[in-house]
Structures are given as C-alpha cells and as structure tokens.
Amino acid sequence: MGSVRGSETSLSLTRKRGVVETCLLDVTMKIFDKMKNLFKKEKTEEVEKYEKGLTKTRENFVNKLSLLGIKYTKIDDKFYEELEEILIMADIGVKTTSIFMDKLKKRVKEENITDFNYLKEVIVDELFLIYVGNEQLTSKINYNKNDLTTILFVGVNGVGKTTSIAKLASKLKSEGKSVMLIGADTFRAGAKEQLNEWANRLNAEFYGRDDIDPASVVYDGLEIAKQKNIDVVLIDTAGRLQNKLNLMKELEKINKVIEKQLERKVDETLLVIDASTGQNGISQAKSFKEICNITGIILTKLDGTAKGGIVLAIKEEVNIPVKYVGFGEKVEDMIPFDIESYIYGLFKEWN
Ligand SMILES: Nc1nc2c(ncn2[C@@H]2O[C@H](COP(=O)(O)OP(=O)(O)OP(=O)(O)O)[C@@H](O)[C@H]2O)c(=O)[nH]1
Ligand SMILES: [Mg+2]
Image 1 (cartoon, rainbow, N blue to C red):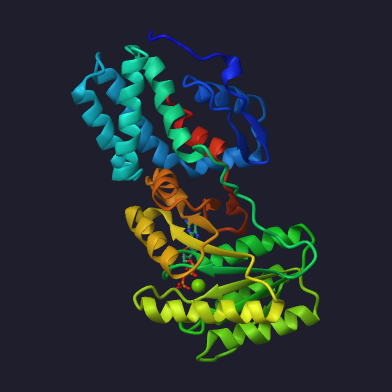
Image 2: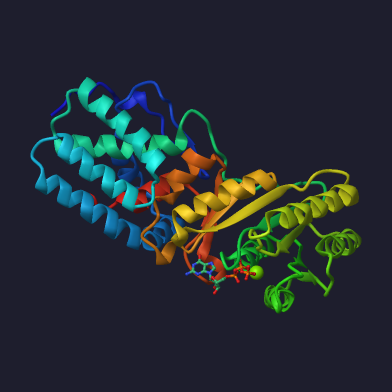
C-alpha cells in the first residue's frame, strides 16, 4: 500500500443542496469512500435516479476498470495505456484524459503507490477534482426574485430542448411559480404545436405564432407575460447551428428584445446537449459559446448512453456548469446536476 498522507481533516465534504465544498489541502482524500458511506446513509430519490440513469456508462466503464485491476499486477506503462484508452472510450475526452493521466502518474510516483485498491481511490479522487477544481461551479439556476425571470434554451436539432423546457416548467409549477412557454422556434414545422401541447398538459401559459422573425414573437410573448405577472418565461428556439451567422443574428436579436423589454439581460441561456453524441456535444458547446453567452448546460439522454464521462470533458474543455441532467423522457426525469451523486452513480459498483 502506498503511503497515505491525508487524514480525515484534509477533506471537508459537505452536501449542501448539490454544492460541494472541498478543502483542497492535501492530495489524499478518499472522496469515493466518503461518498459511498454518505449515500448509504441518506440515499435520496435523486441519488437513485443517478444510479439508475448512469447504469450504461457504469457497466461499460466500471467493468473495464475492474478487468484492468485483474489483468495487471503492476502499475506500469501498459497499464497506463489501457487505462487511458478506457477513459477516452467513456468520452472523458482526449485532452481531459491526458491532463488526468499526468496527474495520476505524478501521484503514483510521489506517493509510491503500488496497491490497486488505493489506486482506485486516487483515480476517483482525481476525476472528481477535474470537475470541482479550484472553483465552485454552481448548478443553481439564476432566478430573479422580484421580477420576471427569462430563460433561453438553445441547442442543435433534436437534443431535447423542448422536452427540457417542459421538464423545468413542471418543476417550477410544482414549486408554485407561474410559468409561460414562448415558442420562438418558428423554423421547424410543428415546433410551436409541440410546445403548446406541453403548456396545456402542465397548465402553463403559452405564447407562439407563425412568424419569420422569432424575436418579434419573444417581444409579444414577454409583453403578455408582464401583463399576467408571470414568474418565469422559458423560451424555445430553433436548433440551427448549420448556419452559424444566421443563428448568431437571431439569438442576438432575441437577447436585444429581452433587454429592451425588461431593462436587463436574459437571466439564463441554457445550452442543451445530447450526451449520446459524445465529443460532438463538446464541439457544439464550443460553437455556441462563440455565438452567445451560455450560462449553463442541460445534458440530456444520459439514460441511453455509455458516454457519461462527457460531464468531465465539458468541465475541462468548455468550463460551463452543467445545471441539469436528463435521464429519460418523462417530466420527472430531469434533475439538478450534482457532481457527488454523479461520481457515485458512475463508480458505485467498483469494488
Ligand atoms: N431517453 C431520453 N430521451 C430524451 C431525453 N430528453 C429528450 N428526449 C427525447 O428526445 C427527443 C427529442 O426531444 P425534443 O425536446 O423534441 O428535442 P428538441 O431539441 O426540441 O428538437 P428540435 O425542436 O427538433 O430541435 C424526444 O423524443 C424526447 O422525448 C432524455 O433525457 N432521455
Ligand atoms: Mg424543439
């Protein structure tokens, strides 16, 4: 067993509604152990959703990692090579994996780690630290307490924008907030009707009409929302990244309209990414980051994919907080992102 330099006091891991507080004083933290114990004691419905939703990723990832521990008796170059490949396959990303591998090798050397069980702890610690790093990425949505909150949803075709709007609307309604959905996807046939149907089902307000200019739809929608004293407006947009310039202009115009109507900027611009597209999702995030100010990411369809490692690539390569994760098609299948539950869901069977 390698030398264990840390102690209980080296880590203050507190769960405060998804906020991770880590005290990065020492390198050996045993975060994974602590998480397992914590979740065994207080397993909430949300943690169970993470467990279930990440099954595919976990099965793929953890099985391979377990085999690695059986195959190798020594931590050598071959072992590292294979580990690197597993991480890249889980869509953690080449860049992120490379940074991780360097850190891991350094720790193995410095701490003279030879024991595989201990190495496992170090691997989970270091993956966790990729996300947490030195800063706190908050998963909270920026709601405006005294005025109308506006949230813009962007993302390419079919990633789950409209469904995510419905999921968030459902959550807000259950908290007693009044919600309006605005259909500013005036491009795709049937988009407006789809959103309207969700609004009816969720008992939310809806505004939408056929118009070539989505910004003017937003303008009129906001006008009504103000009159009706709506708390939160969720705006659906068309997913056309193919024509970047057009989309940029369109989003710029929508943003201007919001600013003009409310005399302040949009509260959130959430980029929706389909996790099953893996590294493609990362490039989408990079492109959208260039054309508008993305304040958060909603990562959908994690239930159907083994590419759950994408969360870490998002942090390292895009550095925009993941605010919600989608584990299914139903309204209750979207939950606030929590890195501890996520890591737990990824590794819980890695014994
Ligand atoms: N399994 C699973 N399916 C999802 C999830 N989120 C959305 N979907 C499904 O993905 C499909 C596309 O979702 P939409 O919400 O219509 O996607 P969109 O981005 O609005 O699509 P466009 O308006 O065409 O650009 C639908 O069948 C959804 O039910 C998720 O988290 N898990
Ligand atoms: Mg849509």
